[in-house]
Length: 574
Image (tube, rainbow, N blue to C red; front, top):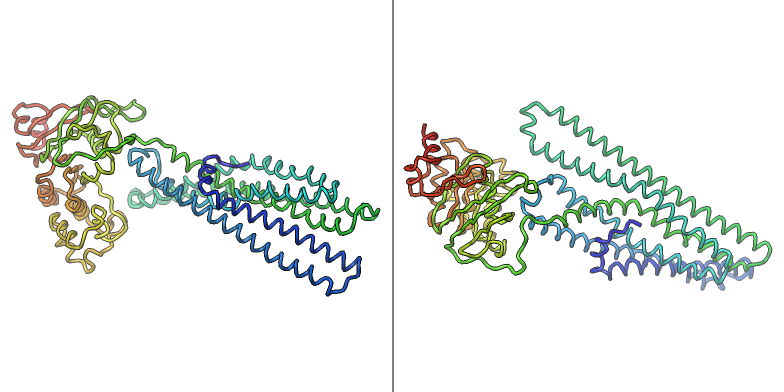
């Protein structure tokens, strides 16, 4: 009956709202029973007892009051259902965001951004119908018909028997037709997710698409995906309309059967008029909750399909297991040691690090060099705590990194990546990501240290200048300087610089490296770079290739050994 146990587990913590949605709905049904009694009594008095209007006024007034109370109870049932939906969606969204943050970049390697966004917003919003309407209606569809059945059976067992026999036919056909709709609903959800993801990819890669002349081809692809989604949606709607037709037809025929039975027995005088009229008025209300459940079944099906995807994300295991009792990292300055670290991707079939051991010394700059695919990015991901080694250990002043609180550890790290991510906000807001409580003076000092303040001072809005999505209004050098200013602002004892000038022209690199030299002073630094000419003889150098550490030593000594680093240096200078 389309009830997801994982969603029901969330609902248990919000039972009062569910009880209110179900209870007020059942109360509305009982008020409908009282209405039916008042109406049948008033009609019997008017036509059989020839009662005057003053005698009927009490019943009519009661009928009117009950109608008002019934409408109020129905409104309260909807409000409680909406409240239930709101709280569950908020809880689920918070859990999903926290879980995605816990997974980190390495935990979602096969996910597409557009599909994730659609899941987090469209998927959670589609739960409205399931939580606020379908779930309360499911319980009302059980409670209300049973209540009415106990009222009808003592008055007329024949009508009660008809209700008892015909009532199960509605959920039976609903499930029978819904089995076909389930697969189509899943296909509809997958098609919409794929459309969202592809459309976001096209928007983000618009420059590349235009330069390669693929605009028309991408337009055709989007049209094909859109057409597939339209066809899938129409097939779901066809089943929904067919289901509604069958359920309405069953309810109508069942009510007609009761009406015929009552009419025949009225002619023979075997049932009182008021009782017959009362049962006839109640018959549509008996089938109404079942019909409403059928009408909400397909909306609930969409929510249940989305729930499967949402809980699939929640059940994704993080690449790094959190410690049961996380410890605080040791005070700075600290050393960082890799001991026989091994790591592989794709379930161990693609090794990236093989028995790597080295130490980053306090207050010293260590330069990590190696060809593409050597394992440099894997080392950065391990240091940032986004994934764990499959063998070996990482020690911070002798304390295992696996035992340290990841959030507290990342507070000790300032990271300048190859492609800094900038949000569609002001320059000041992007800087304050590193230190939310930073004052304008703090921002100015950091920007001056990064060599960015003079440029900002020329802008009319200064630090309140919107920089566009991904820093679209800034040059490559300005983006790198902003990332360096973030690192200055954070003022962390451990600094990771991952190819900070890889996207810049040679004439821009010199000025950026001047800012980097100021940033690395008195900090433990890991610098990944392709620019070997900037490496001084007193710098600690690690040479990595194919996941193996080939050389480990100071640059001057490594040059004298005429090994890998010496050959790389000579090749770069040549």
